[in-house]
Amino acid sequence: MNEWPDGWTDSSRGREGRGRDASRPDPTRVMPHTSAPGVPPQTRGPGQGSGYGQGGPGYPPGSGQPQDGYDGYDSGYSDGQVYGGGRGGGRGDYGDRPRPDWRRRTKWTILTLVVVLLAWSIGTYFWADSKLRREVDLSIVEDRPEAGDGTNYLIVGSDSREGMSDEDKQKLHTGGPTDKGRTDSIMILHVGDNGNTMISLPRDSDVEIPSFTGSESGKHYPAQGKHTKINATYAMDGPELLVRTVEHNTGLKIDHYAEIGFGGFAKIVDAVGGVEMDIPRDIKDEKSGADFKKGKQTLNGQQALAFVRTRYALPGSDLDRTKNQQKFLSALANQTATPGTVLNPFKLYPTMGAGLDTLKVDKDMSLWNVASMFWAMKGVSGGEGKSMNMPISGPAPGGNLQWDKAKVKQLVSQLNNDEKVTVTSDR
Image (cartoon, rainbow, N blue to C red; front, side, top):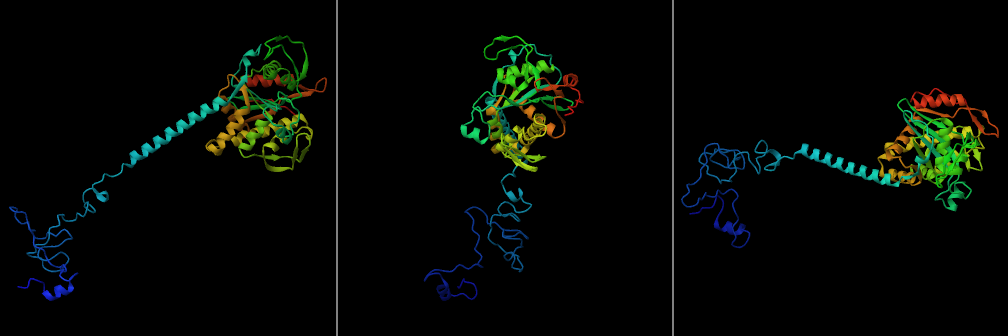
C-alpha cells in the first residue's frame, strides 16, 4: 500500500531526495501522535488550536478547511502564548523578567551624585583652606576700638615682588628689587545687612602714627605725634602697623586683613580668562606700562596690573586711581564668583590656586571669610552696595591728603551701627 501523499511515488521519492537514498520530508504530512507507555493519547477538543495559531479540529490552523477530527501535533504551548505570553499574557513585553524599577534607579543615581558632589566639595574646601597664608597676627595690635555690627575687611594690594623672577618684574613694569615694598591700594570693605560699602584710602592720606608693638621684634614703640603717608606705615612694620594706624585714625575696628601682591594679582586675572573693563578715556603711562584706548576691552593680567597702578596719567592722580582700583576689583570679583568659574574645575582650581598661593591673611581668617569678602565685592559691583573714597577736606602740610574729620566720624558711626551709608566723598 502506497502511504505517500497523492502525486508521490517511490521513484519520485528517490529522485527528489537530498541524496541517492535520502527521503525528502513532506511538510504537509501529519505525524502521528505518540505517547509514553501507559499514558493515554492527548486529543484536542473542539476549537483548540495547535499552538501555531488559532484554529479548530480537523485540519491544520489557517488552512481554511473544516477541522473536525484533526489530531495535529501538540506543540506544548497554550493559545496566545509565544515565548512569554505575547501581549496581555504573563508579565508583558519583558516575559518572565521583572520590570525595571526606574524609581529606585533614579533614587540611587541621585544619591550617588550627591555623595560625589559632597566629597568633592569637602576635598576642595580642605585643599583651599590649607593653601591660605595666615601670616598676619592681629593679636599684637594694641588699643583696639570696640567692634561694631557687621564685618570690616582691610584689603591691601601691595607692590611686593615676592616670588617674581627678573623677567616677571620687567614684563609687569614693577621695577625695584624689594620684596616687602609698600601698599599700592588700601580699601576698607564693610559687609553688613544694610548693604556693603567699599571705601578706598588714598595712599597719600595723611595719618598719625600711633604707639605700636613691633611685629617681629615685639618691642613697644610709643607715639611721637609723627604724621606720614598711610602707605609708609606698611613699609615701616608691615600689616600689623597698617591695621593699627587705620584703627587709630578712623576709630573703626578691622576684623580681617587680606593682601595680594603684584604677581598674584596678574595670575588671578589670567586664570579667569581676563576681565572686561569699560575704560573711560585713553590712558598711556610709561611708569605702569598702561597703553589703553577708550572703550570696552578685556584686560589680561599684565594689562590689568598696569591699569590699577596707573596714577600719573590721570587728572585726579591718586583719587582717580583709587576709583579705577575699586571698579576693577569689583569686576574681577564679579567674574570670579560665577557658575562658569565655580562649577568648572578647569577654571576653579587654577583661579583658587593663583589667588590663595599669594593671598596673605590674618591668622583668624577662614576660607568662609574669604568667600564672604569676594561675594561682597561682587555685590558692590552689581549695585548692591556703595563704593567711595575716604572723605577728603584738602591738602595737609607737606602735600599729603587731609581727611574730612567730621565726615569720617559720621561714616564710621554709620558703619559701626550697620546703617546705610549716606556720607559722600565729594571728590
